[in-house]
Image (cartoon, rainbow, N blue to C red; front, side, top):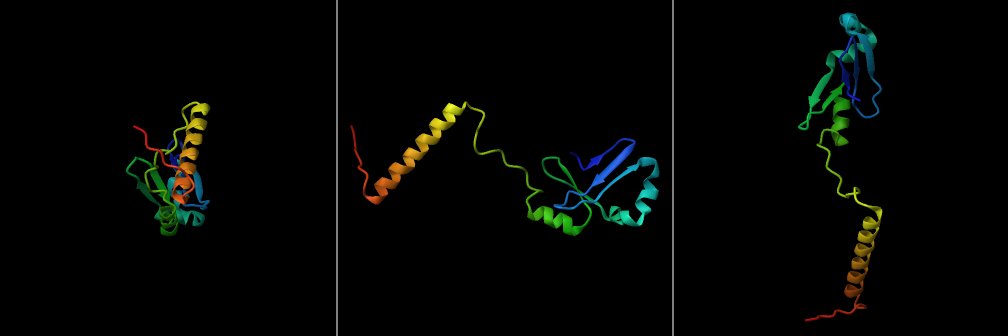
Length: 118
């Protein structure tokens, strides 16, 4: 969901973690909406655009700082585990990795054997 949705009705929501500030209003009544005491936070609203084009909206410095601390401003990293392959290949790769780890542990502990072949 985008924090700002333009239509005849406008929605502004704070992207701060655990912040519940949200206002829906008719754009024709924007001035009256901003003047309401419960919407005083709208006057200090700041929009931050990230390098990847996301727009983040915050009602206060505190919400923006909390969002920064959670890493929301960072560009999302691509997944490190590729799951778009078949489950059998994933299971085989996991088994091979576990076997290699066990063999390395055995060699390091002195229990395993090292064979050198021509």
